[in-house]
Length: 114
Length: 106
Image (cartoon, rainbow over all chains, first blue to last red; front, top):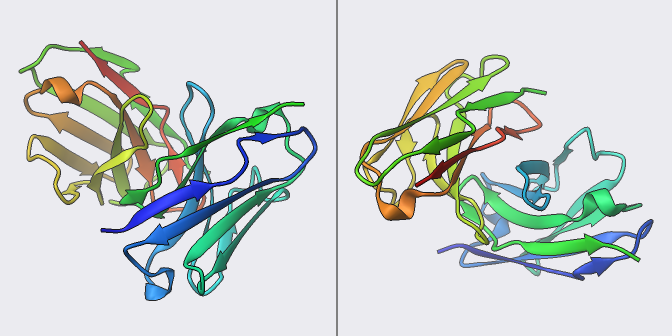
């Protein structure tokens, strides 16, 4: 059973960089054929797809966030990461990592506030 | 970007009733549509992928149908644990996009 767990600061100051890591267990990121994604959900709102990384390192980002987003992978640690720069209060959300479409982490709330 | 519209926004039903949820895409997504269920404080759970395939462990009362631009999720007989928010997601064009959700409440 594949499991994913997000980790990282729950509070980030405006204009700083949000950094989260998703640790995968029960399966290898290297196994191929899957998109390892980040999705977020603003409080009380719907789901917004941020982007994905393939095990090979290929990425695709939502154009609405592309200028601020980087997703990277460390296959030796079996984890992948999200960096979102220049955050504002509008980036306050629950951030999920996922092996789309079937395995999701539990989500982590990141609040942007001074 | 493909825009998904879900209707109704809220569906008020009772246990044992049949629920029909709709998802419409702004352009064809072939059969690359998924349905998720989300309960408060939980991550979305995959119910249906590729329009009509039930995910592992999902009850047969969840039935997905449709192709192109019009899709339906039918819950044949609502159980108490089915009251939740349901999202559709198109997986045909990047960026993948989600619908705004349908809340099924009692």
